[in-house]
Image 1 (cartoon, rainbow, N blue to C red):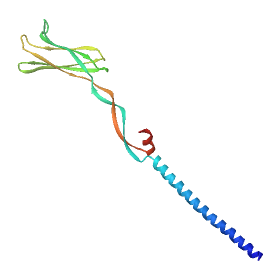
Image 2 (tube, rainbow, N blue to C red; image 1 turned 135 degrees about the vertical axis):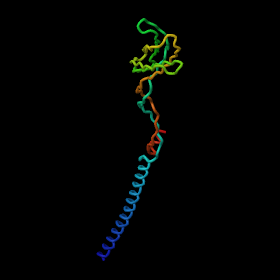
Image 3 (cartoon, rainbow, N blue to C red; image 1 turned 90 degrees about the vertical axis):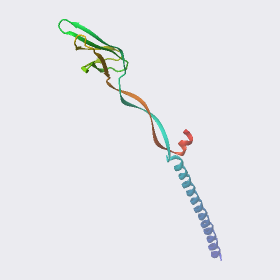
Image 4 (cartoon, helix red, strand yellow; image 1 turned 135 degrees about the horizontal axis):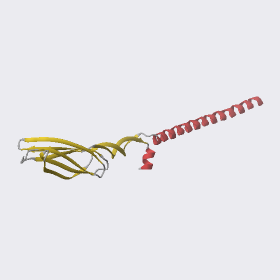
Length: 179
């Protein structure tokens, strides 16, 4: 009987160990499920998955015409022994831009029949400087004339700040912390 008792005792101990292992197995399974749930929650919170419209400023170059001011525009009649009668068109221009450049002035002389003559003068005018564009037209004595002009300013490359938009993706944590 002693052997039987020892066998029963052994079976009882084994049964307790088996049931303990089963309990431990359930504990490990619950622990693994908890870790998986925590990992999924962290992934959802930390991975950027929410689209957000972001604005930012950027400096970009652009082309524009230089700014200027016409200080004066005159058409005067003159005479000398060699040439005879002539008219002088003078346009005084001030470069009001922060950049210098080559300006062109087209002088037009009209009489009663329409366009009589056209001349173009060009010169480099530095920033803030003033320049006198002048040309002469040979005309007749007592010829009735009028003058017109047009200015062609140089193209300069300048910079401007532009606000741009783009879609960025943020995580829930970023949205909670930074907004």
